[in-house]
Image (tube, rainbow, N blue to C red; front, side, top):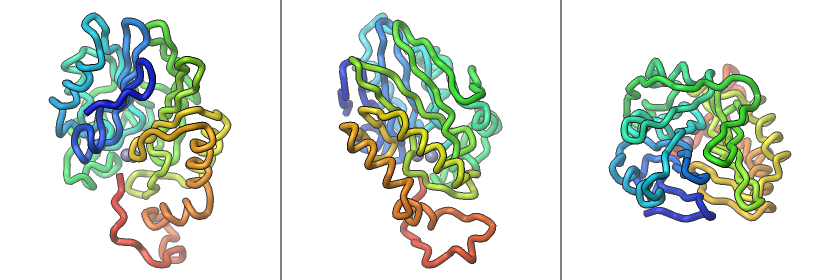
Length: 252
Ligand SMILES: [Zn+2]
Ligand SMILES: [Zn+2]
């Protein structure tokens, strides 16, 4: 299954699209170049490739694979995508280190009963913001730490609408993932300032219009959202903060 979100913007992977362990995978095209945002777990890589091929006409080159962060459900298929399309893999330097060493705890591979095969990152971003030229378009990468140290969101404009590839806006936060609650809340505040028209969330899908995007981000920034993810967050003072852990919570 593929889903056309806008002209030249599709969801090609994720639960219901490829493997149930996959985070959302989005494809955006500008002229004769395209970029993929995240690659899923790689467990249904043939289905993902076939979905990508259905969207891209012959002659359109997949130039970049942009990784939002280092978690297994978002990245484990990355090197297979690079092998197939010859694209460059982009990630933030603070998360790249865990991908290049195949760190199973920080990447959440253990939570998915998997093991991450290390792979190299072609372009490591540093600093708060970078523009990436893709064909006749621009994708902006914004460092948004909290869920992981090197979490990125990506924005781009399509037909005058601001599209936000927001990754795991909902967290969770967990010490295994080196999450940081203060950074997470600051990042969410910056996402609100973007005032995006469409939010593509890795596990909640397509959120629009603008008012719904705002409400969604505000929910996770609020004490209600915080209490939801706090059950997964294990800081040093966890015992003092713990009320009733919910064993059914499944991290991403
Ligand atoms: Zn994640
Ligand atoms: Zn995720």
